[in-house]
Length: 387
Image (cartoon, rainbow, N blue to C red; front, side, top):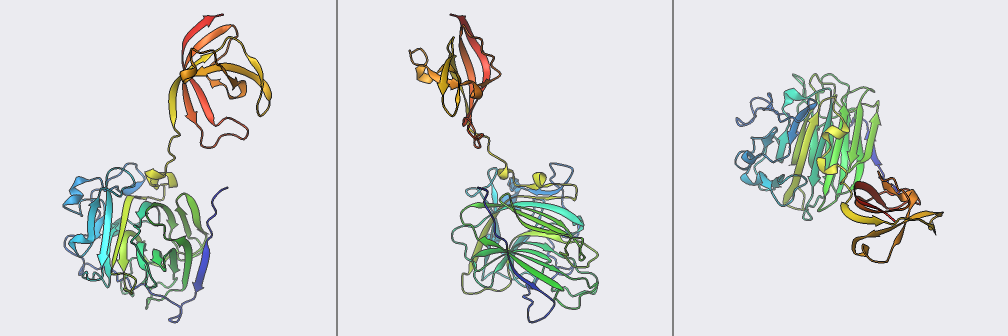
């Protein structure tokens, strides 16, 4: 039975200081951007298709010594903020480890270690794929933290301390999505016209979570927000507002950011792998973490003997069976029934001959109803002797 994800709509609020929970996220400007980081222009892009803008799999050995060597820019305060991880990995041999501590220096109003897409590569529509891993030690209390955000770009003269229009959050031991929107061309405060929280369940620990996000940004009823978690679609907001009325579009940031510490812990560690950003022409399959691809079912090549005559047999139904030998049975007087209906692909049986075959044997994850759980395919007829 297909696993059902229950999506809980926690709140939809109008603009009001009494019901707006603000995530203070100051807009970066040219005057407070670190010299080692230039969000205005993009790095040398690491594409594996024409529709991908960015790809970070953390396999670049230069990341050990220079965290700015990849496709994304790192915003961090301490040496422990980012490191390459070799033991907790989704795909390949390396992943990214992000850590903040309560004692860290603040960056733009909070404690953060985040990798950021260059602002000038943001588009009106995009596809995003990434994997996250929360260790067993990860705790999240009432104050919460941002673990992925689509950061808006304020217009000239606009209030800059605005919460992101789309945010992936942890809080109270759960994962939540927060969507905000506002139609005002110039927002004179951090409060928005609309706010929606969607509960995505308890934080999975000690396992990778695969995310795919598709956003068509709009402050009107033309927006699209689709989110898949481990292959299951958990958010589907079609023809609804999902962003602010800005000239430039949001850019993606991932890692961990905490604007206010509570008493639940003084440290946060999270791992990321397989981060991809695609254009509006990209797709789910193009950006999804490669570890999400179906694992090929186990298969093996075996030797098989087929007797010169058939027998009537009864299993799920009456039919005619081949008599076959496999493995240690070959060369003995023992033969077992093999239904024609589950026969060997590529093999045409002719009575009166004993066959020696090489066969590929594959275990099926989802066998047909009433059918065999094993698929047989002919590789080679090794021998054919008349009897």
